[in-house]
Image: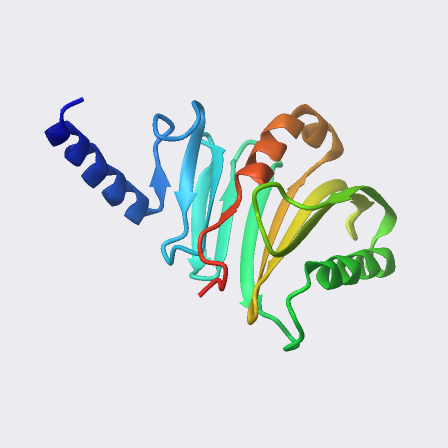
Length: 180
């Protein structure tokens, strides 16, 4: 590739990143790459899914014909203590055990490639409507804000799409550690 062609490719990448998504050819085949317009985070998602952002601090990725859902929220942390994602994970476990039925924690850990105060858990529970769900909930805490990513599906879908769900989970990158 010549230097002129390289410049053209770079310009197109900047334009595409600015729009929020990059086509699958720039990401892994079958996936698009989403970059938050405020450059706080990025992630990959299947090209068959639709992205919507009801407000600057919320992202929804869904497919009209599937139960798989991905939601990201960024909100202020309630306390000014040092960032600690474990506090949020423990609060989530407590809330689930109080509000939902048949709660099971299937896995807990830290996301790969994300430094700092972060962690995730995969849980199974029956919601208020009686629907059995499996969720992967991931937190990243900065000094002032917290990012929460929830990937949710029914158990059959989660089992069938576990590789896709883990791809989305592992693709999450924090571009601005302060989330500002």
